[in-house]
Image (cartoon, rainbow, N blue to C red; front, side):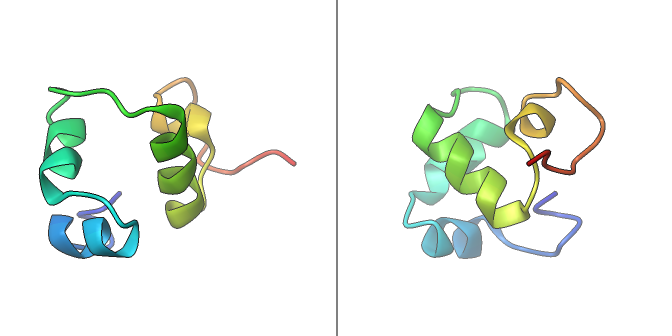
Length: 63
């Protein structure tokens, strides 16, 4: 999603007050995101956490 939106890891890290290395590790699956990070990423990209975790192909959040 980050690359599709042409957002750099550095920009995403700054906007979410995170470390760029953490973003890189999440993307390469060298590290798993905690709940707080999953919520922040889901909110930032306006998708469900299930979508981030690969549990659904539907990015829309169900309210």
